[in-house]
Image (cartoon, rainbow, N blue to C red; front, side, top):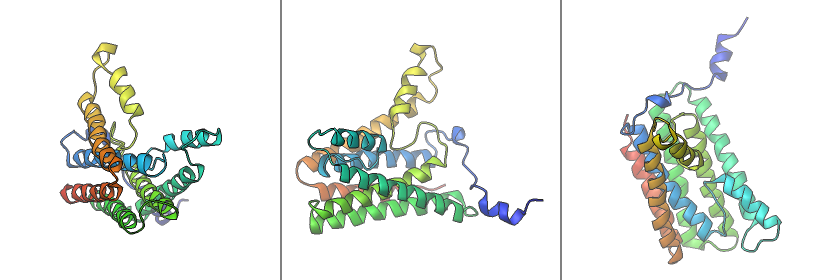
Length: 235
Protein backbone atom coordinates (compact mmCIF):
# COMPACT_ATOMS: atom_id res chain seq x y z
CA UNK A 1 0.00 0.00 0.00
CA UNK A 2 1.42 3.37 -0.99
CA UNK A 3 2.16 6.13 1.46
CA UNK A 4 0.37 9.35 0.34
CA UNK A 5 2.74 11.53 2.35
CA UNK A 6 5.78 9.97 0.67
CA UNK A 7 4.18 10.36 -2.75
CA UNK A 8 3.55 14.05 -2.13
CA UNK A 9 7.21 14.55 -1.27
CA UNK A 10 8.54 12.74 -4.34
CA UNK A 11 5.97 13.73 -6.95
CA UNK A 12 7.22 16.27 -9.50
CA UNK A 13 5.74 19.77 -9.36
CA UNK A 14 2.71 20.37 -11.57
CA UNK A 15 3.80 21.54 -15.00
CA UNK A 16 2.30 24.35 -17.00
CA UNK A 17 0.56 23.02 -20.14
CA UNK A 18 3.04 24.47 -22.62
CA UNK A 19 0.95 24.11 -25.79
CA UNK A 20 -1.69 26.43 -24.28
CA UNK A 21 0.77 29.30 -23.87
CA UNK A 22 0.23 31.90 -26.60
CA UNK A 23 2.94 34.32 -27.69
CA UNK A 24 1.55 37.26 -25.69
CA UNK A 25 1.14 35.27 -22.50
CA UNK A 26 3.17 36.81 -19.63
CA UNK A 27 5.25 33.65 -19.36
CA UNK A 28 6.04 33.61 -23.10
CA UNK A 29 7.05 37.28 -22.96
CA UNK A 30 9.32 36.56 -19.99
CA UNK A 31 10.96 33.68 -21.86
CA UNK A 32 11.53 35.90 -24.89
CA UNK A 33 13.23 38.39 -22.58
CA UNK A 34 15.46 35.68 -21.16
CA UNK A 35 16.33 34.52 -24.69
CA UNK A 36 17.61 38.05 -25.31
CA UNK A 37 19.78 37.72 -22.20
CA UNK A 38 21.13 34.38 -23.44
CA UNK A 39 22.49 36.05 -26.56
CA UNK A 40 24.26 38.63 -24.40
CA UNK A 41 25.71 36.02 -22.06
CA UNK A 42 27.09 33.76 -24.77
CA UNK A 43 28.62 36.78 -26.52
CA UNK A 44 30.37 37.65 -23.26
CA UNK A 45 31.53 34.12 -22.52
CA UNK A 46 32.66 33.12 -26.01
CA UNK A 47 34.29 36.40 -27.03
CA UNK A 48 35.44 37.61 -23.62
CA UNK A 49 36.15 34.48 -21.58
CA UNK A 50 38.38 32.39 -23.81
CA UNK A 51 35.95 30.85 -26.32
CA UNK A 52 33.82 29.19 -23.65
CA UNK A 53 30.03 28.86 -23.78
CA UNK A 54 28.02 29.32 -20.61
CA UNK A 55 24.52 28.97 -22.07
CA UNK A 56 25.10 26.51 -24.93
CA UNK A 57 26.49 23.30 -23.47
CA UNK A 58 26.54 21.53 -26.84
CA UNK A 59 29.07 24.12 -27.92
CA UNK A 60 31.19 23.41 -24.85
CA UNK A 61 31.38 19.70 -25.61
CA UNK A 62 32.58 20.50 -29.13
CA UNK A 63 35.03 23.12 -27.84
CA UNK A 64 36.56 20.57 -25.46
CA UNK A 65 37.07 18.23 -28.40
CA UNK A 66 38.74 21.04 -30.36
CA UNK A 67 41.07 21.80 -27.44
CA UNK A 68 41.99 18.16 -26.94
CA UNK A 69 42.80 17.92 -30.65
CA UNK A 70 45.27 20.79 -30.23
CA UNK A 71 43.28 23.60 -31.85
CA UNK A 72 44.60 26.95 -30.61
CA UNK A 73 42.46 29.41 -28.67
CA UNK A 74 40.29 26.90 -26.82
CA UNK A 75 40.40 25.97 -23.13
CA UNK A 76 39.58 22.55 -21.73
CA UNK A 77 39.68 23.95 -18.19
CA UNK A 78 37.32 26.80 -19.03
CA UNK A 79 34.80 24.58 -20.77
CA UNK A 80 34.92 21.96 -18.00
CA UNK A 81 34.37 24.72 -15.44
CA UNK A 82 31.34 25.87 -17.39
CA UNK A 83 29.92 22.36 -17.72
CA UNK A 84 30.37 21.61 -14.01
CA UNK A 85 28.78 24.89 -12.92
CA UNK A 86 25.92 24.45 -15.37
CA UNK A 87 25.16 20.97 -14.07
CA UNK A 88 25.26 22.27 -10.50
CA UNK A 89 22.80 25.01 -11.46
CA UNK A 90 20.44 22.50 -13.08
CA UNK A 91 20.67 20.33 -9.97
CA UNK A 92 19.79 23.32 -7.79
CA UNK A 93 16.83 24.12 -10.05
CA UNK A 94 15.57 20.58 -9.62
CA UNK A 95 15.93 20.80 -5.84
CA UNK A 96 14.13 24.13 -5.72
CA UNK A 97 11.29 22.78 -7.85
CA UNK A 98 10.88 19.78 -5.53
CA UNK A 99 10.97 21.83 -2.34
CA UNK A 100 8.56 24.43 -3.69
CA UNK A 101 6.14 21.95 -5.22
CA UNK A 102 3.25 23.43 -3.25
CA UNK A 103 4.07 27.01 -4.18
CA UNK A 104 2.27 28.85 -6.98
CA UNK A 105 4.21 28.53 -10.22
CA UNK A 106 4.73 32.27 -10.91
CA UNK A 107 6.31 32.67 -7.48
CA UNK A 108 8.62 29.70 -8.06
CA UNK A 109 9.67 31.05 -11.45
CA UNK A 110 10.38 34.51 -10.10
CA UNK A 111 12.54 33.04 -7.35
CA UNK A 112 14.66 31.14 -9.90
CA UNK A 113 14.94 34.10 -12.25
CA UNK A 114 15.84 36.53 -9.46
CA UNK A 115 18.66 34.18 -8.49
CA UNK A 116 19.82 34.15 -12.11
CA UNK A 117 19.86 37.96 -12.30
CA UNK A 118 21.74 38.14 -8.98
CA UNK A 119 24.46 35.82 -10.27
CA UNK A 120 24.93 38.05 -13.32
CA UNK A 121 25.27 40.99 -10.96
CA UNK A 122 27.96 39.23 -8.93
CA UNK A 123 29.79 38.33 -12.14
CA UNK A 124 29.69 42.00 -13.17
CA UNK A 125 31.18 43.05 -9.82
CA UNK A 126 33.99 40.51 -10.22
CA UNK A 127 34.67 41.77 -13.74
CA UNK A 128 34.87 45.38 -12.54
CA UNK A 129 37.06 44.60 -9.52
CA UNK A 130 39.36 41.90 -10.90
CA UNK A 131 38.79 42.10 -14.68
CA UNK A 132 38.29 38.76 -16.47
CA UNK A 133 41.90 37.58 -16.57
CA UNK A 134 43.54 34.75 -14.68
CA UNK A 135 41.61 33.03 -11.86
CA UNK A 136 38.85 35.65 -11.98
CA UNK A 137 38.01 34.47 -15.49
CA UNK A 138 37.10 31.02 -14.18
CA UNK A 139 35.03 32.59 -11.43
CA UNK A 140 33.01 34.60 -13.94
CA UNK A 141 32.57 31.53 -16.14
CA UNK A 142 31.30 29.54 -13.15
CA UNK A 143 28.85 32.27 -12.09
CA UNK A 144 27.38 32.63 -15.58
CA UNK A 145 27.11 28.89 -16.18
CA UNK A 146 25.56 28.38 -12.74
CA UNK A 147 22.92 31.00 -13.59
CA UNK A 148 22.24 29.35 -16.92
CA UNK A 149 21.97 25.92 -15.33
CA UNK A 150 19.36 27.25 -12.90
CA UNK A 151 17.47 28.86 -15.75
CA UNK A 152 17.56 25.80 -18.02
CA UNK A 153 16.56 23.48 -15.20
CA UNK A 154 13.61 25.77 -14.46
CA UNK A 155 12.49 26.37 -18.05
CA UNK A 156 12.73 22.67 -18.89
CA UNK A 157 9.93 21.91 -16.43
CA UNK A 158 7.59 24.40 -18.09
CA UNK A 159 7.30 22.49 -21.36
CA UNK A 160 6.65 25.59 -23.48
CA UNK A 161 7.33 24.54 -27.09
CA UNK A 162 9.97 26.45 -29.07
CA UNK A 163 10.95 28.61 -26.10
CA UNK A 164 13.92 26.94 -24.48
CA UNK A 165 15.62 30.39 -24.21
CA UNK A 166 19.12 29.02 -24.93
CA UNK A 167 19.11 26.44 -27.76
CA UNK A 168 17.87 27.20 -31.26
CA UNK A 169 18.75 24.04 -33.18
CA UNK A 170 15.34 22.40 -32.78
CA UNK A 171 13.62 25.75 -33.20
CA UNK A 172 15.32 26.31 -36.56
CA UNK A 173 14.63 22.70 -37.57
CA UNK A 174 10.94 23.19 -36.84
CA UNK A 175 10.91 26.50 -38.65
CA UNK A 176 11.91 24.73 -41.87
CA UNK A 177 10.38 21.27 -41.39
CA UNK A 178 6.97 22.56 -40.25
CA UNK A 179 6.75 25.33 -42.85
CA UNK A 180 4.09 25.43 -45.53
CA UNK A 181 6.86 25.10 -48.10
CA UNK A 182 7.61 21.68 -46.59
CA UNK A 183 3.92 20.79 -46.58
CA UNK A 184 3.46 21.50 -42.87
CA UNK A 185 1.02 23.68 -40.96
CA UNK A 186 3.52 26.38 -40.00
CA UNK A 187 2.79 25.72 -36.33
CA UNK A 188 4.12 28.45 -34.02
CA UNK A 189 6.18 29.95 -36.85
CA UNK A 190 6.00 33.46 -35.39
CA UNK A 191 7.29 32.21 -32.05
CA UNK A 192 10.20 30.43 -33.71
CA UNK A 193 11.17 33.47 -35.73
CA UNK A 194 10.94 35.71 -32.68
CA UNK A 195 13.06 33.31 -30.62
CA UNK A 196 15.84 33.53 -33.21
CA UNK A 197 15.43 37.30 -33.49
CA UNK A 198 15.66 37.89 -29.74
CA UNK A 199 18.78 35.75 -29.48
CA UNK A 200 20.39 37.80 -32.26
CA UNK A 201 19.22 41.02 -30.61
CA UNK A 202 21.06 40.05 -27.45
CA UNK A 203 24.21 38.64 -29.04
CA UNK A 204 24.92 41.61 -31.32
CA UNK A 205 25.17 44.36 -28.65
CA UNK A 206 26.91 41.89 -26.34
CA UNK A 207 29.57 41.30 -28.97
CA UNK A 208 29.98 45.04 -29.57
CA UNK A 209 30.52 45.69 -25.86
CA UNK A 210 33.04 42.86 -25.46
CA UNK A 211 34.98 43.80 -28.60
CA UNK A 212 35.27 47.35 -27.26
CA UNK A 213 36.62 46.17 -23.92
CA UNK A 214 33.36 46.61 -22.00
CA UNK A 215 32.82 43.05 -20.81
CA UNK A 216 31.85 44.16 -17.31
CA UNK A 217 29.20 46.50 -18.71
CA UNK A 218 27.83 43.69 -20.88
CA UNK A 219 27.36 41.70 -17.67
CA UNK A 220 25.65 44.68 -16.06
CA UNK A 221 23.30 44.84 -19.05
CA UNK A 222 22.55 41.11 -18.65
CA UNK A 223 21.75 41.55 -14.96
CA UNK A 224 19.54 44.55 -15.64
CA UNK A 225 17.64 42.88 -18.49
CA UNK A 226 17.11 39.72 -16.46
CA UNK A 227 15.96 41.79 -13.49
CA UNK A 228 13.55 43.86 -15.61
CA UNK A 229 12.14 40.66 -17.11
CA UNK A 230 11.42 39.33 -13.63
CA UNK A 231 9.85 42.61 -12.51
CA UNK A 232 7.57 42.74 -15.55
CA UNK A 233 6.50 39.10 -15.24
CA UNK A 234 3.01 39.15 -13.80
CA UNK A 235 0.61 36.24 -14.00
